[in-house]
Amino acid sequence: MTNSLFMRIQSRFPADLSKVLIETASGETYSYGDADNASARIAGLLTALGARKGDRVAVQVDKSPEALFLYLGCIRAGLVYLPLNTAYQAGELAYFMGNAAPIIFVCQPHREPEVSAIAKAQGVAKVLTLGTTGEGTLIDQAIAFPNDFAPVACADDDLAAILYTSGTTGKPKGAMMTQTNLWSNAATLEKLWGFNSEDVLLHALPIFHTHGLFIACHCVMLSGAKMFFLPKFDREQVMALLPRSTVMMGVPTFYVRLLSEDDFDTNVTSNMRLFISGSAPLLPETFVAFKERTGKALLERYGMTEMGMATSNPLNAERIVHTVGPALPDVDIRVCDENGDVLGTNEIGVLEARGPNVFAGYWQMPEKTAEEFRDDGFFITGDIAKIDEKGYVHIVGRAKDLVISGGFNVYPKEIETVIDEMDGVIESAVIGVAHPDFGEAVVAVIVRNDDSLSEDDVIGAIKGQLANFKVPKRVFFLSELPRNAMGKVQKNILREDYKTIFSN
Ligand code: AMP
Image 1 (cartoon, rainbow, N blue to C red):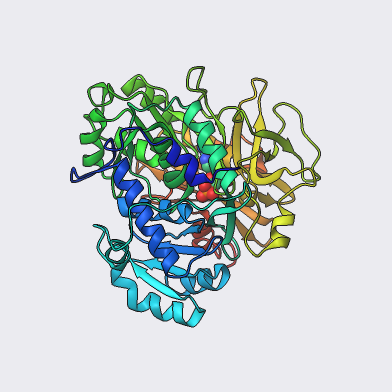
Image 2: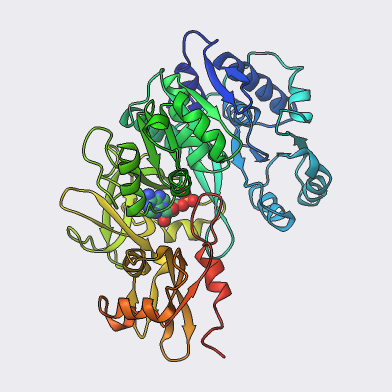
């Protein structure tokens, strides 16, 4: 790349820089010119503080326009942006600082004393603050710097960002994203999803994650579009802004919540051209209910931190329920068995992907990186999937979720699908729990809307439909499933909660 990621994004800004890029929940607007100037000032400040190309800048702040400008300032100065979930606590921050060795850490103002102490112990040179309305030392100090800053030239494989993956086991791993990884995915998706300068994206996702930061913001900035930037998903705000929006990107729970609003209907959605869903599996009944209520088919796509997006249902052809669509034009995918042998159509195995979007490896973890790549460059995603005769991918579950009961492999998704179809069930999560006879036993955790539904009813109904080794040994009912900020069911929490039920 002769141009850096920043230069390429900037070259797509509208000629009229007064065009609005961001409108906040309170109606404040920020233009493309504001983003350009703010990123220059921030790049100037970070450079004056000693940050040089390739240095990491760790950022744990609330979502705000200034937080996005900080991202742009970092890539403008050739720095490596490292966003962190605001939920991370002291011990986790010490790990990230020790592992990534950032030169600067930007934190929420109220956490400055705590973060400064950790930063000192970990040898991080400088701590700055940024609050929800732009207050704090970052913007205060950046004001003194000029509105222009010549973007630092970067090679294709220079890093642009490191994103730590949540990981269900072991320490979080820092996925290294290059200039090309982020640019190629952004350019592909902006085209594939038909973004244009008239679009208004309803942005209610967090921006410490690939979905809200790269997928959403890049599509907007590459097309000169505008976005409503909400601190988080708020039903009332979203309902009020949908009539003025054209595209929404969300996790499945956003759409479930919208469907629970009686007045969520075509009056609210008539201006919308596209609803995109991802980051967690979309239940078929959500897809169906959404279509019935709005007349629109949710566009489900699939990706992960390590590769941005890899597959997507199409914009202008059939969107098939319970699939995540075919591979993106510049991404190769295949399904393999555990030895790496490629499986045929509709055969279930582990999904692998290769393309310009696939990350450069895990920061400071060459062995982990080597474990997850094949010799021919395919990344082993760890998602269990099949590819059908139309080339559409069906995600069947996570390899790590696989339950081995009495020597048999059990894919939780298969059992969850049967349970979810039962009357009285809203949703379910199936996990493996240590069992003295079977090694692991299948356990179902269910959210019901009919209190008369019992453990025996569920077990009895599954018995007729699935092989005995797949039938849950126990069934538990919860009022809701534990989920993380991206809407993913946290099966690790369920496994922990139920780990001793067969040992007493
Ligand atoms: P993350 O790295 O946090 O983005 O999580 C990536 C994981 O989310 C993938 O490996 C999948 O297990 C899951 N995921 C993302 N999109 C989908 C989808 N549309 N359907 C099912 N699982 C998904």
